[in-house]
Length: 208
Image (tube, rainbow, N blue to C red):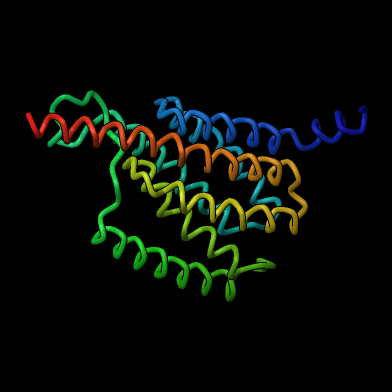
């Protein structure tokens, strides 16, 4: 028990990042506005963690998370102009056209990040790091816009990340991402229920 306590003291930044990250995800499943301030705090903590672990793409991603959390906070408070009754942004599906842009964006980001990590850093896993980073960028933007399908991307990202963090010895973060994967599945189910309820409500109103 004392060994665990000593380890937690020595790695308190990662432990705090793990806890705030988990609470952040729980709030995002619940569509609670506290998602975003917690996302900001978690990002700041993980910038330090990933720098020490030489996860440079992951560290850069945390800077993105910091700014996208500010945007997401603003975005959730401002509903789409077509939904006059909503007090905040509502869950919506991703259109085929948007999926094309998401794919192009993710692929472009993957190539850019992979080339940078391969040629200018000592990252031990540049391609996998680039894969999770590029998808995380677009998935977080989708969360900021409350796109239902972002949960599918997170299930994939988190599952791959578990293996990467075990490889780098970031065990508290590994535990966090196991929880992330489970919560992403829960988030998918909960948001699907909410979306279907909203779509049924709109259908009834259109028929009146």
